[in-house]
Length: 251
Image (cartoon, rainbow, N blue to C red; front, side):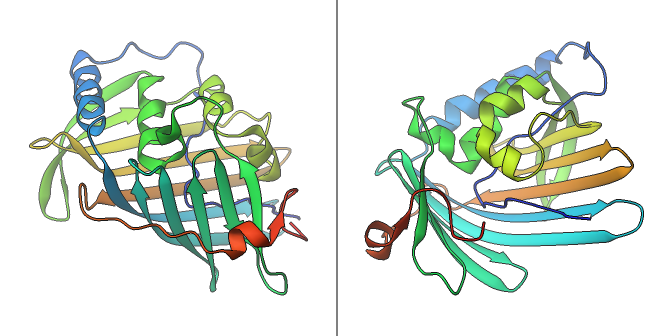
């Protein structure tokens, strides 16, 4: 079995309903998402922590891949930095204006460079805003009070569609991950909101996919903090001087 997974800390979005006609949104959930969007529109900086776990099996062999990451976003200067730990290897990635720079693994040095946004809204390439766009474009459901790290939050749930995935996740990345053109058996997105500030505290995405006897699941969780705190993102000179336009060698 070959398991190919393209992992990036700012990866978001994903996928389909197991039925064609989802129930209508809850009014309370719609209002909560709108309030969050209004609040986040004024956010200038934030930090995030992400964990991702992907498991796949073809009935004979199984494999699990994990990624942990941290990052910071400056929406004023349009810069983002993320550090990912991929099974013991650490990689840095940067986003500025309309380009991303992904550090390549040893023995290669340098960065893979690609365009990341044609929409004109730079914020949509960052984790928080992509998650919110997912909820904006999906039916949403109110799940009431939940406790996160000892603090009260409210939970909103969504089941994004395939069309939402296609528009929010770059096609090249989803195809690299072996997911392009597929419908998920189950996709559930969750958003925990601080009811006092209307700021997101945490988001999570659970995916299940089965095809020709093989199965795969993915769980992505992101926590948000440090709203309005000082953030400095400095892009190393190597990101400009040593570039790969078609992805990292061997990828």
